[in-house]
Length: 146
Figure (cartoon, rainbow, N blue to C red):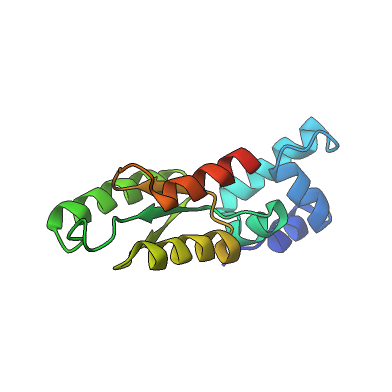
């Protein structure tokens, strides 16, 4: 797998210069940015999103939250089709899909909180809607804190 270190070596620059060039940092000259970006594209370089996310403090994942088992039947083929559609759109944007599913609202909230704390996931799709939902309230608190 081609790394940013490989791109830097082929371009004859430091890893930090290659990184800045690939991220369009204005501290790097336009000519150098274009040269490194062209080299990366020609070599088929794909960024390491885990490394980028670690630096940014968030994830390139979107959490999809199912209603609790007492409100839905997640094994329904309709949900698989929804997940396929969501995933197809996420892949085009270099994002991945993470699913939260549980039997009780308390377990589901714990799952979503873990996704936020451990995976740094800040984007969610709720596959349900009902009043006074603890997941929606928690998600709202994440959005307002951002």
